[in-house]
Length: 531
Image (cartoon, rainbow, N blue to C red; front, side, top):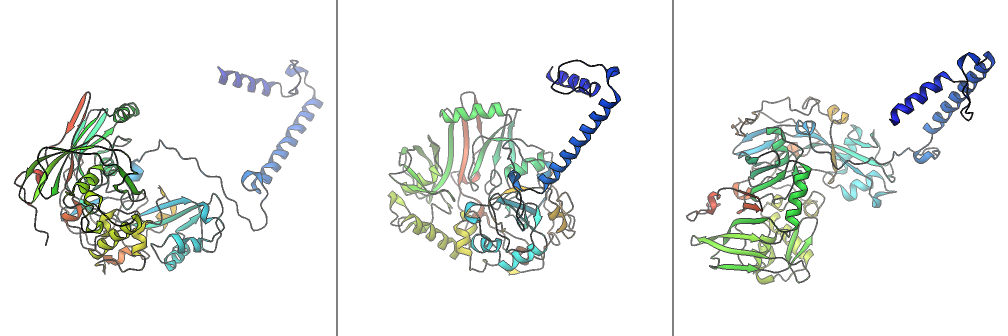
């Protein structure tokens, strides 16, 4: 009704154009004189001219209508983020997979990272910020990237890194992105009934894009291979953990499941294989857990931590290791792993809580003898010496970057074609797609949709998720500025990609989802010789 009234009023205004807005007397078109028409036309012409003048003045002004001083640049207001936006076909088509040596690999692709100017950057030049915070690449790299239009400020290419940053500046960096390989096993869908989607997640695959991973994640594999998107995450599993992973298909179902989790009406059952002979019978651990580092998710038992409770029961023992059923009654970060470490039975092949960096007792009974900072540094040093820093899953702007700052990459040698396991990013930023700059710097490696066009690919069977082994690619697309394109790294081994922890069952008031036991949980299983 409101729209109709507005339309009618507009029509009447057109017919009675000679009537001043503040006069409430109807005047017919026949009574309008030529003089009045001329005056009316003059008024409209004046108003239009004034509006145009105001528009030109506004265009010369900066944000908030302020007049820009000489040499001052315009900074647009920050964009409003829509939290409801999910990944779509445009994102899924950025690149594609190939399969080699039992691994799922991603062809390198161009990608935009973006971030708004942080408070501590205001008043500093781009050069200063790159030197102090974005050390994944050399200053020479960023200078050359700027010359080629890969670094933009408020959508404008920046050629001079001496540009001083201001509040609300939007920085973008186009990079040639490499992702680590993951296990090439199919993503098995257990249930898809329109309300929930339940999958059996293989170890080594993150649930959603994070850190170095984007396409090699559950969310992207489902979108690329099965056309499934707009999923709501109900819970998460660590990258190295396998098993039941539950998504809601609708917002209503998501809210219902979230409430069940908060009310502790969802029973979770895990199975793991631990070092040594775990005691028989039921064992309950109630030690409080404290987060040592929120950035990397490292935890330890500490009286200042949050209350939690885990019930354990041994299922079998093969003379060296034990299979244990775990029922976490609370949901703290790394709860099962931390409690088992405290009990003296760390999970087999746990790169963090089974590490000798915790000291001679490896954290048993809370015996560490190190500050949190010393513990973090010891973890980095141990994995650096073993050439396995990637197992710690540190973010790119975290402590791993500090440890790697002045170090030659492990076992990396120059090659003609890249088979990268690592990637360089400048920040944990929000991605954008459809970038013109990314297309311009592709050098024929990537078409406008982000698909590789320079080498033959073997696509997975989208109907059942089965993979076929691809022949070794002649050479993924290379970029002359990308340092990863000049290196080759050995493929990760199964030991690098699997931790013996599996989400076996999730049960609610009216549902139950479970998987079969993994092979390593069988009673007669024997660990492979990794030497």
